[in-house]
Image (cartoon, rainbow, N blue to C red; front, top):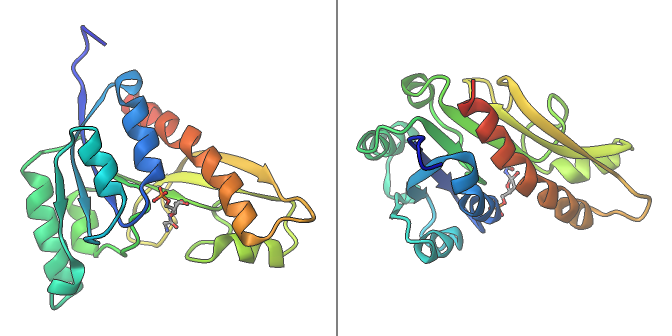
Length: 191
Ligand code: GAR
C-alpha cells in the first residue's frame, strides 16, 4: 500500500463489534484508514476493540437526544470533521433519518444478516428457519431511505442444517460476515 493513499472511513457500531474487528484486521489490505469508531451505546464492546487498535472513539448516546433528527444532526457534525470517503455501519442498530442518509448519499454501507431482499429488519435467522429456507446468509448493501433496500454489493449464503436454531445460524452467518465485509468495502473503493 506504500504508493497508494488510504481511503478514510468512519465506522458506526452499537454492540460487540466483531465485524469492526474484522475490518480493523483487514484495513491495510483493503487500503483504508479508520478515522473514528462511533457508538450510540456507551457500553458497546466494539469501543474496546477500537481503543486496542489505537483508533479514536466517540460515544453519541441516542438516549440523550429528544428526537432522531437531533441525534442524527450531532452524528453528522462529528462525521463531517473527518470528511470520510465511506461511513460503514457494523452492527449499528439505529434507523437513520432521511436527512442523514441524503447528506451522505452513496457513501453509507451496511451489513445485514440475511440474503436480501429476503428478511429485512430484525430477527432474520429465526424468520429464515420458520420459513423453511434452505439458505441463510449476509448481505452488504448501500444504505438508502428504504430500510435494508439499497443496492446489494456482495452476499454470502450459508446452508441451514436441520438442527440449526437461530443462535447456531447467527454464529455461522457471522463468521461469513467477517470475510464478506472487508471484500465488499474493497469492491466499493475500487469502483
Ligand atoms: C451482525 O450480525 C450484523 O449483520 C447485524 O448485527 C450483528 C452485529 O455484530 N446487523 C444488523 O442486524 C443490522 N440491522 P457485531 O457487532 O459483532 O459486528
